Image (cartoon, rainbow, N blue to C red; front, top):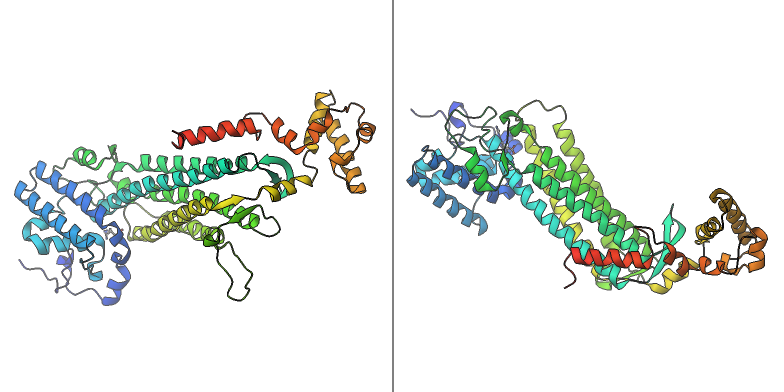
Length: 467
Ligand code: ARG
């Protein structure tokens, strides 16, 4: 029997009596972006072919022909010699078509008991599982850069801010280690994502499973999946794992963006808290004096597209009926863009931090204004048995007097302080000093040098930075 397929060579051409319109081919093609999945598509096909042979659905000779053909195709792709053809729609049909062209009838058996619906879910899972591992590495590298910067900056005191107003003095290292924690949670999220997506979709076939005697467990074992999916209809329509990946990536990029914002501010003439290496800055085409922090600005700016990609994915799934719908082809570009954008930002941020230094003098200068030890004075009164609310009010009045007289807390004499609160004694001046304030914050997670040193050492040990 001959097909009515009019020479379009499409694997699904049998029931069609005319060639696909060129405009439709252009509109439906995805190979210009999903070619990125080629390596994973071949990995999945190898496991599928081996399983088909084990189950007697193809012969061992056919299996070997398929495996050899897939390797030849893989080599051509790696060497950049493989020609992806848009009229063959996607990466799956391009590879299958090339296989048939290479090895003939055995190639036509590869798609036995398989659909592109379970195939594409497998490819995307293999891809994201690998990327989750790479993201963990990138985040670890960024944590190392932060911890090294915290180590170099140990002992430097700066204002800690709330509402972008000077609040209480802190160690600069404590500030950097805050980001170490944030990126640590990001690593956990990618780990969770990888664990949950590690369930084999292959064998769900189009949507209902297959009547052919396949063995999914053995494919799961070969491909390193922890389990096989439980419901074939869920399997071909599920993109939860892509949304999870994109949201983990968004959180990581939000953290990067907050860090970037601070680096931009801190590199300004108004702050001068940090110096960014020249080779990590750019100049102005008109203003000869400029040295601009374009890297953190771009990182901050790219956050929008990472959020946009997550919104695009969520919107894609909203209202999508079971099971597979072609809409799902739209999952790939947002995911690929998120992978590219976030991985580039993570790598760039780590490199930038390795070439960033704190300006001790400017940070110290900034701690002198702003009455940042006012809370310490209130706590001092608490230790002298003044209820905290009263202590707060007393210190508030002292600060108001200072503002009136253009003084800092440390400019007040003991007599002036005692006039406000008779409980105050000569030992108050340790409390009012910036160093004394920082040293006193010994609560767990606090900024006292002893606490920060322990946190820093733990981080260094976890990252294997100490021998
Ligand atoms: N290119 C498609 C995608 O990315 C592959 C699955 C196509 N399945 C189908 N029944 N047309 O989702």
